[in-house]
Image (cartoon, rainbow, N blue to C red; front, side, top):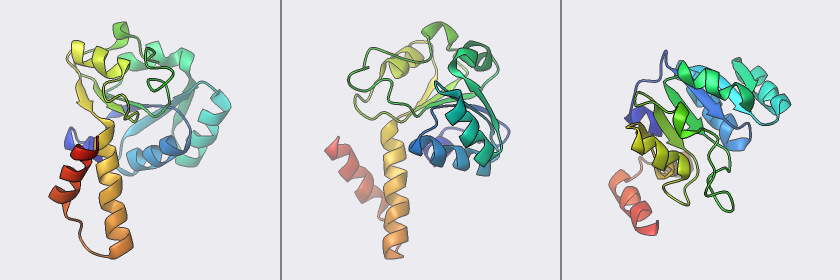
Length: 161
């Protein structure tokens, strides 16, 4: 998991923005790693459904300002930040603090508004391409039964984006 390159997840308070397919995979990975997860979504019912499956907390996006204050990690698994919403972010710059780790699932643009603002206040960043790399590594191993050539795959990913 890309996030583990930046921090130990166990015991960390993690906000997951979104409740779609990517969010589902991330939610289970965070719970398996021992993170204290809360799922926030525009549609509260979707957040509740995913939270029930993962056994964690949930809330609507209106709770974000209060929840961010007490969190260690924010993961954006929504489409906010990609075309046509490149100039948008669910997390306002005023809510960001330098002790936060921000993980972005949006890969294009590489630096979303969330990432740019997080960098400006000194947050640690996990870019989307790290998640793509780890997905590829796991799939390679799953499909071939062979340990993946990490350096080769990482180089190919960098050249492709």
